[in-house]
Amino acid sequence: MSDPAPAVEIRNLVKEFKTSFRRKPLRAVDDVSIRIMPGEVYGLIGPNGSGKSTTMKALLGLVAPSSGQCSIYGRDSLKVDSRDEVGFLPENPYFYKHLSGAETLRFYGKLCGLGGRKLEDRVGELLALVDLEGARDRRLGGYSKGMLQRIGLAQALVQEPRLVILDEPTAGVDPLGSRQIRDLILKLRERGITVFLCSHLLEQVQEVCDRVGIIFRGKMVREGKLEDLIAIEDQSEIVLRDASPELLEKIKELVESTPGASVVKTGKPRTTLERLFLREISEDAP
Amino acid sequence: MSSTAATSSKGSHLSRIWVIATHTFTQLVRMKVFYFLAVFAVIAIASNFFDLPQHEGPEAVGANVLRSIKSWSLGAMTLFSVVLSVVATALLLPKDAEDRTLYTILAKPVPRFDYLAGKLLGVLLLVFVSLALMDALMTAVLQVRTNMVVAQQEEMAKAMGWPQDAITSLRNETLESGPNASLQGAVFAVFLRASIMASLALLISTFSSSTLFTTIVSFLIYFIGHFQADARNLYLHSGEAGEGVFARLASLLLSLVLPDFQLFNVIDAVIEGQVLPMIAVAKLALVGLYYAVFFTIASWFIFADKEF
Image 1 (spheres, rainbow over the protein chains, first blue to last red):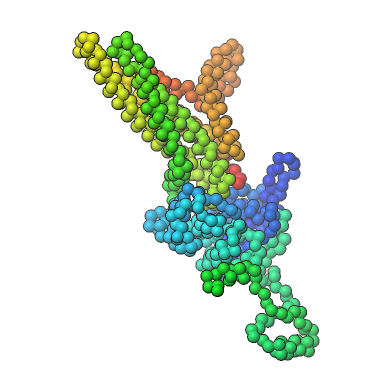
Image 2 (image 1 turned 90 degrees about the vertical axis):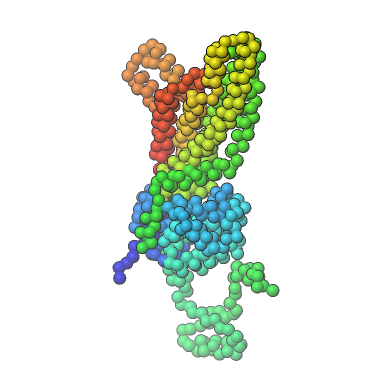
C-alpha cells in the first residue's frame, strides 16, 4: 500500500518580519517542520506570539516564507490552486455584518465556483450542521460570538474541503459554544476531514487531537502522537465502580505483595469544571 | 474523486470578479450611500429657481434657468461621484484587512487580482447606478422646465408679433438647450472621471494603511490633475528647460502616470450649450480606460506581494 500524500507539509519554515526600529528582523517562525497526514486532527499549541498564526498564514499563502516550503496535498502554498481544498477560519473573524447567515455562505460558495441548486442545498446542509437554521436570515451584525464562530466554520466547509485550518476556533466563546465547536471538529474527524488547529485551550486540544506540536518562540519544541506525549509510561490506572472499602484494601494488599509495584494514589476521579458547568446548565438538569 | 469535482467547479475569473463586485455593491447599498440622492433631488429642484430676471426679449427668457439646472446637476454629479469613488474604495480594502474577512476570501481559491478587480468593479457599479439615477432626475427636471420655457417664449414672441419661422427657429434653439445627446455624453464623462479616481484610490489603498491617507492623497492628485497640463506646458515652453529630451520624456512620463483632468472640461462646454461630438466621447473613454487599467494593474503588482 503506497503512502498517501500528506495533507499538510511544512518544511523548515522560517518567517522573518522587518521591524522599523531595529535592524535585526524579527524571526516569528524558526525552522518549523510539520507533516499532517489525511484524516488526522493536528493541534498546534503555544503561548501568544509564539508563531502559530504566522505558520498557518504561511500555509495559506497569506505571508510568503523567508525560507522553507509549505504545501497542501502536494501543491505549493503560494499558488492559488493549493486553496482548492482548504477551508480556513481565522482568529476572531468579523464577517460582513450586512449579510445574513445564508447570504454569507452563498457568497463564499460562489467564490469557490458553486451555484444554483447545489449551492442552495449546501447552504441548508451547513446551517443545519452548525445549528444556525433558526438564524439563517438574520444579519451577522446580530450574531453572538459563538454564532459567528460557527458561521465561520460553516463558510470554511462550504466547498467540501479535505483540509480545514482553524486558528483559535474557540477564542472568546462561552463553554457551551466552545463545546459545540469541539463537537463539530469531532464530526469533521468522523467524516475523514483533516483538521489543523491551534488553540490556547489545552484541554480541548487534548480532547480532539490525534497529534500535537508545541511551538515556543517560533521553534517547534515537542511534537508527536498525543497519547505518547501525555502518557506516564511507568504508571497504570484502574477505575472501578461501586467498589467496597474491603475490595480496595484487598487490591492494595495484592499490589504491595508484588515486588517492584506500588500504589501511587487512590481516591475518587474528578470531573472537570467544564463538564460540571455543562451538566448544570443542560436542559435535563433538575 | 472529490479533488476532480472541486477542480472542475472552481469557476472562472470573470464569475469570481462578478461575485465580489455584486457583493461590494450590496455592501455599499446597505451602508445607505443612496441617501445622497435625496440631497441631489433637492439640488436639481432648487436649481430651477436660479433664474435671473431678464426682459430683453423672448430669446433670453429661461435661458439662464436651463443652464443653471445643467450646471448645478452636473456639478453635484461630479462631487458625489468623485467623493463616492474615492471614499468607498479607500474604505473597503483596509476594512476587509482589519476585520480579517480578507483572510477568509484569500484563503479560498481567489486570485488577488480577482479580489481587487471585483472591489473596483463593485464601486464603479454603484457610481454608475447613482449617476444613472441622478441623470434620470436631471433629464426629467430639465425636460419639464424646457417645455415651460418654450411655451413662455412662444407666448411672448407671439405677443411681440414675431413671424412664425422666427418663432420655430427660437423654439428649436431652446429645445437644443434641453436634454440632448451631448448632455448624456457629459454625464458619461463624469462617470469616466469618477472611474479614474476610483482606480487611483484603489492603487493608493494597496500600500496605505489608513482610509484617511488614501482619501487625502487621492484628492490631492485630483486637484493636481486639474492643472498638471498647464504646469507641463509652462515648463516645456519656458526657456531652455523644456527643450531637452530629458525634460520631454519626464513630461510624457508624468502625463502617463498622472491623469490630466483638464480633458474633462468638455463637461463645462456642454453646460454652455456646445455640442459634444461622439469622437470626443470616444477619446475620453479611451483615456479613462487607459488610466483605470493602468492603476488597477499597478495595484495588483503591489497587492500580489502584500502580506497580511
